[in-house]
Length: 122
Image 1 (tube, helix red, strand yellow):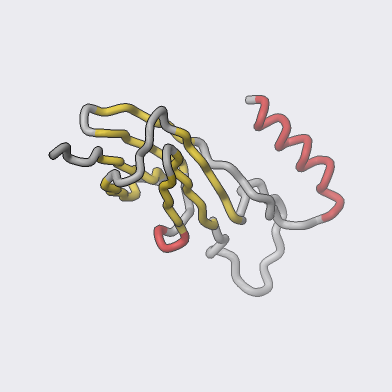
Image 2: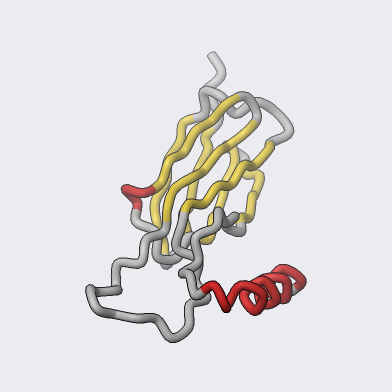
């Protein structure tokens, strides 16, 4: 709620500039521990799969990309603009290293679902 209020006041403070949103934004995420690894859900409505980068280093999962406004055409002028169309980043820390985990991911109704599957023990 506080973020929404801050965003509203930021919008009011900058509305004289008449610029579309373009700041870096940080999508919401849920992380679940599972018997075979981790399940991560990231809220990315309107983001194309080809505009997403996923990287693992040590115990961190880094997700970045860009949401683009593909519905505007030449000659359109916006009346109100609240959705952020720009680059996003999200870094999630895990309690142990996730390097070497098998990564499976897909989109489901605006959510990026990432399965981080533990390495099989030999």
